[in-house]
Length: 109
Image (cartoon, rainbow, N blue to C red; front, side):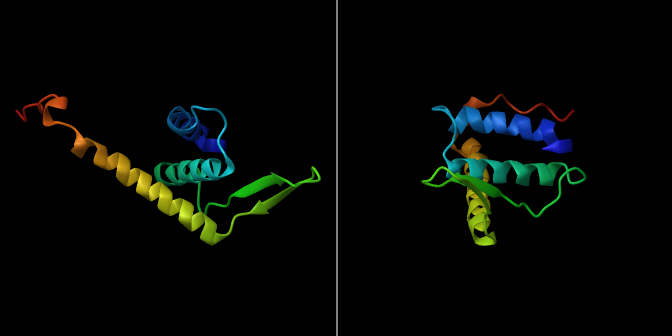
């Protein structure tokens, strides 16, 4: 992850704690995770990572040979939409909480 490794490692640890409790992710979950992570790194560290995001997947065929393939823009578009939906879902969490769940605001003076 290069210059953004401290960002990406931390965010991937967050994702692992939430989504990968049972072990390594399935390919679709890994694609979602890496896309969301790179999107975050681009947004908060624009000098270190630039888009567009390109994702390659390494798959093993029935004969045991491995082949890499790049995901299409359409495949990545769906993943970006899923990441946006997850951000909205997390953002809406506070609205679901009781107002008493948070301490009062600090006085302005």
